[in-house]
Image (cartoon, rainbow, N blue to C red; front, side, top):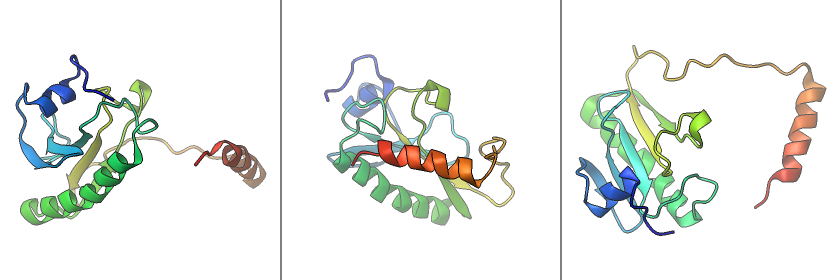
Length: 142
């Protein structure tokens, strides 16, 4: 899928918008987030424009996921972070602000507040949970 003219991440990939690059190869670009959750928060973006992980070719996803722990290790060593979050939002309702698939690599310190403040839901019972799992199984396509 070609790059999109009005996409800020596509403009960063093209060099039309500056970024603080952490890593780049033929498939992906990683750079520091301009509005970080934590100091050192990086984004990994595919060099082809895809809105969602659901349309992203596997070679791009594989590269993003292989790169993420390498960036996380660099963050932990350089920033003395004690952990990290990987976050991939798909769709506006999920918090995706830029409609170009991207993976957040967020360094975390022991005293950091929770990244997401989501209340956990509960299933009414095990049978309801198993019924939903069975319905989802039927829709998973490889």
